[in-house]
Image 1 (tube, rainbow, N blue to C red):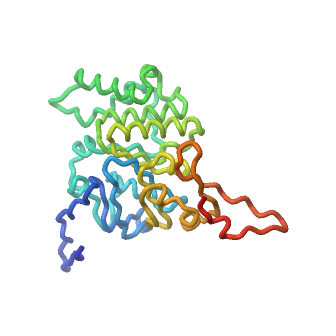
Image 2: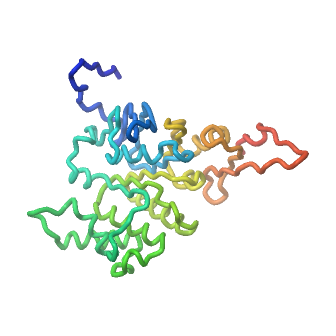
Image 3: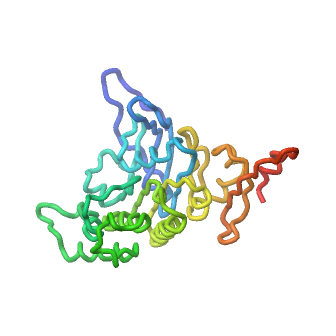
Amino acid sequence: MAPHHRTKGRPPVTASPPAVSGSRLAGVGLTLAYDRRVIARDLDVAVPDRSFTVVVGPNACGKSTLLRALARVLRPTAGTVTLDGERIASWPARRLARTLGLLPQSSVAPEGITVADLVARGRYPDQGVLRQWTREDERVVAESMDATGVASLASRGVDELSGGQRQRVWIAMALAQQTSLLLLDEPTTFLDIAHQIEVLDLCARLHAEGRTVVAVLHDLNQAARYATHLIAMRDGRIVAEGPPAEVVTAERVGEVFGLRCRVMADPETGTPLVVPAAPARAGTSVSSGDVAKVT
């Protein structure tokens, strides 16, 4: 791609870059920062259509920052995010909300709100002065609660629910938007293992139904089990991306996480399973070659 030439005193060229083949949602040359603190620089990323894409990496590497930029929550200081070949910054808010749903970290529900009322808020993009609540909205809300297994909780207060139940309610609200793209920022944080699997199984089912799902996860083994496409980040850059079997190798895990490990096939799924190396006991040594071997 030829560089953009800027003339002193004039804004940069704003024409949309060409769409990335096979990817409705993409970013080119992204520099992401909070105030003056740069988190990531010159990132190129393309989310494969109808994939379950998971972003992994150590803490503070830029995973959530990248997701926020793709969702238009954070404006890049350089570069462009495109959706369907158009600059996402130019999309009207209501149109974007009909296309892309975002579940941020640690969502907080209004005090006293019921499950049904919170899920119904996902219908706001279709409401307006001339478009009031309809039976179709009721149907979509009911179907969203059914799909996430929270229909039986409809009349309960959100603040009465367990962590796993609350997370499913938030996903139901996102589903009520009827978007084909769903972005989730650390949806399993603060959940016990059973509820983590419950949420990830739901995400996998939504992907199987044809949605493009993008999630930030901390657990590398869960990411390898559920993702169809992995993006591995470190220090604000993308180190590797592709199918889990290609990305999750012992050498790559060492490069990204600084972890000595073995990688083997998960006995349940056949997907990569990372087994951290045991600390060497006094008087023994473990060669890096033994630890890094992929079995």
